[in-house]
Length: 408
Ligand code: PMP
Image (tube, rainbow, N blue to C red):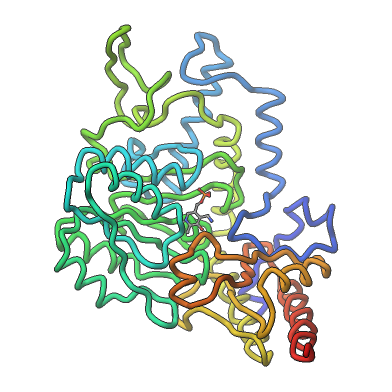
């Protein structure tokens, strides 16, 4: 790939200094962490740690300020409409559960439809199953095209013909890398007067985002997929979409006044943040956002696109390899199977060569069924992925394809 399009940041990631032999191609599951993120957390624990939002002493006040500063940083990074709609959760999964529970509980009733797609991660399906089962509503799915895009005609039809109350779709597919036309998805939902949640777990780490412009009512993501620590996610909501919703969980930090028999609640955003959060990890996430800002998300996107094109070129040349996913807009994910081999066996062979990939259904069983395969092997990229990583994968796959072609 053209060197001008590539980032050169490997040295920022200590894991690769400790494991120089490693070819890490599982960033869609979770990314590695730059030293800046690891240090921010270690220094906070070593020098500045205290619980937030309660202490009457300066150490706690300054920890609170640093935690709340990350809320502002996130609002700015994602161009969120307001800091009041920036809610810290444990991960993207919890953010979907929050919306499904708090919004669903107050807005869904028998016969209503939650419109998802066949391509969703289970995290954007199961929470909706739970809430619809309780109230007699149901979940319907937009179909996928044979090459792995959302079928927009089917989306339009279902929006028009079904009693849809809310739309919940992914921004980017974790199994195929497909980048869905987010603006169009939002516009079509809004044209029907419907709120829309976008699952950005695979969008936020790889694409520049302007949520104010995008207009999605709810956008969810996980820090651990975007160079930050595990244990932190975000619900980025338009504050008006949250207003009037009941809390998701109860406990400390989200209250105004509590009596033994009843309680009143804190305003946004604290209403949705019960209990002690992952304080140091949120601060580490702030460092990850600073790091990504330093690279520039447009350059992150270009780097991963250049690597994807290079990888597709090399893998398409291998006979006996079945590749899945569209030729259109796509993030750095390649999903494939080797003729005659189980995905887990292929991943096992690759691991022998120190190549880390994921094999399985990628928490997207409906999508696998639509492709009529039980599993695929998935290689996925991040800012630290290099052409040498892609070469190692393609070389090893060349041997594996040949091995299985010769199997009787
Ligand atoms: N949605 C998508 C598209 C994902 O890829 C993932 C993570 N694999 C999730 C949601 C859930 O993320 P988490 O497990 O961090 O909550």
